[in-house]
Length: 217
Ligand code: ADP
Ligand code: ADP
Ligand code: ZN
Image 1 (spheres, rainbow, N blue to C red):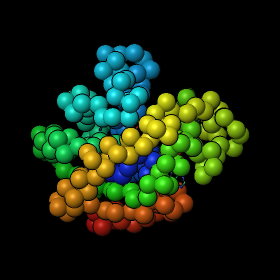
Image 2: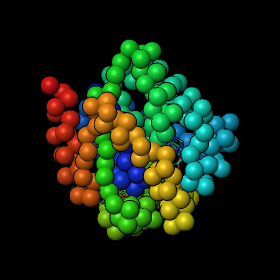
Image 3: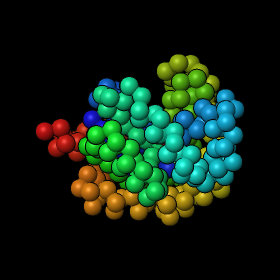
Image 4: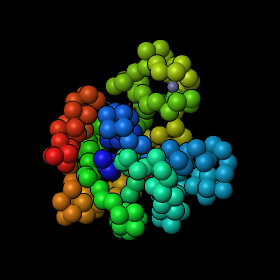
């Protein structure tokens, strides 16, 4: 199974990606996670990405396409993969099409998780992430069993630097301008699956799996 997860920041892509990767036994590739790891480790990539990530704008296409090209060439992607947060521009989508053509594979589906803007703001500004394992929580909608502590590994929870109100508004604007056109792009290719994202986490996952049934048969 080869999937991409579309949807605005806060739609629940990362949350669903975990369940989907487990279900299909495929790797979860999050460009946002890759950039955050690089920034934390102060690598050359991290130095390039930091200013954009902090400002809530997109890392340049050539940099982003380069890391995805390299990642998709690794052997653990042979069984399938789930791209979370890539592509985010039409240039990235066209580059992905080229990469997949070279690898002689194609996408099964582009899953578009839909959530309205006021709820996205509430989700983003209340998000907390585990420093140790990357698990995602929400202070109101999906609280950890113990305050400030990950229920999976006991790690410390933190708030992402770009999850403040001002940067979130910016990211949602960038999404509208740069990424929303991809919905039409994948609809035209006949692989778009629209999912109602403003439901319980388990229900969203069930709806995605039901929508993908068609692609398995
Ligand atoms: P994205 O990867 O699309 O930016 P996340 O998966 O990180 O989104 O989710 C954003 C926030 O919303 C997190 O705090 C997460 O716990 C919460 N969340 C995700 N899905 C749901 C849902 N179906 N209902 C309520 N809260 C959710
Ligand atoms: P969210 O889904 O909550 O917006 P991500 O973790 O996917 O957050 O992305 C965080 C940041 O990483 C983005 O604001 C952007 O700076 C950078 N980024 C992630 N994916 C891409 C991409 N495909 N193209 C350009 N920049 C990206
Ligand atoms: Zn954890």
